[in-house]
Length: 464
Ligand code: HEC
Ligand code: HEC
Image (spheres, rainbow, N blue to C red):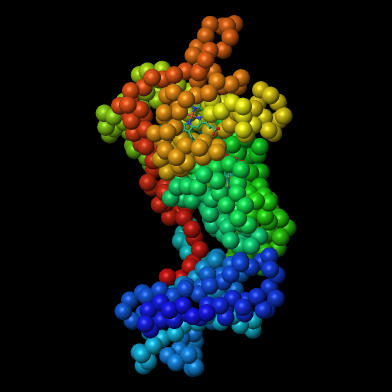
């Protein structure tokens, strides 16, 4: 197949794919297809991209006549794609490019220098600057970093590479970041995520901002993972999400020299184990720390930086105006609950039993973890099933739509005297201006620095 792009650029794509399959790479290790893409880069140059999940070396060639080919370079595709810009052949009216797979030329080794773009010295993950409230109760008590896995710069650097590495999925098509996207507060803008094989996750991917701080320590909407160290190995082995086994993963990573270096730097020896993978990923997830929002800037100055509308929203959120009780469940500067897991009245009967699906107890049905509301503006859609597309819909739900059910948490009910039956769901009766103010307040929790922070971004080298 030849795809015409402009008068002097042609792509030969199918021959490449046929070759990749012909050499007998196990089918499960290959993406459905490898492709070559050519785009105009300037008047006399083309951007050539190889998309290839196989972690292979490709020879890039150029020709003016489709007969004589000259080699422009040999690329190792480190993480799904690689690209570079090449000038056209000045001595010919036409330029053609192709990428060849040559089994005898697969010996380019990956190194930390050619596979990754890591700074020297490394980013600071071990001691992130934190506001004063994070150093005292109640927030110090929310910190789930165990003494047995303190975050180090080298450990979180390894975790960052793992988080963005498609090798973690069986067919090398998905990384953690495919469903936890930095620009979306490390969540997925899709209601449900798609796994390595096109399957759909049962719930909405959670944002990961400030996951380090949560009093109950557990992870997932139904809290089925007791610790973050337990949690991070589960998507890798999940049959919908990444479809990998831990032994296949440790074997696969052991063949990459850059991992040997990163594991040695993080843990003192080159050994690659699932325990070390878990520890490094947990260190990176705990490094997703958001403390530079407009809200944070407002704390030391009494929110003098807020608009009148944002301050009205803050007072509604805190229950200082009206009868909303948001802060009872979205409390502290991390906007997380205290000792309880809650039901916020989304539905009855329970389509998703939440914690009850794990414990089998009727009183746990419909109870769900609340991830931090930090960066909530970026993490739409909302709730465990992604049912609300906007914050306006969420606010209207709390205003008028909370559904009564046996496990509805007390703050969302009309209070009744001790011993009396639980009250019906609260109706907030907010005016249109008050609802808009509450949304405006929630948007002050957005931290643009997090969504673009290089220390949390994809470290792989994809060429230029
Ligand atoms: C195919 C999409 C997908 C991939 C890939 C994926 N996740 Fe998730 N993640 C989700 C979904 C969906 C949930 C919520 C699942 C649930 O609660 O049942 C989730 C939940 C989480 C949570 C829980 C957050 C909290 O506050 O409790 C963490 C942490 C997390 N993922 C980290 C990771 C890491 C690390 C990786 C890579 C090893 C990863 N995820 C890969 C979709 C994905
Ligand atoms: C009784 C505790 C409780 C109260 C009070 C409460 N919430 Fe929630 N909130 C929850 C729970 C539990 C969830 C997750 C529910 C789910 O997905 O099943 C949630 C989810 C959310 C989400 C979506 C989070 C996400 O990542 O998708 C937003 C936004 C939110 N609440 C805002 C508010 C606001 C604003 C108020 C006040 C009007 C409020 N909440 C009051 C318990 C509460």
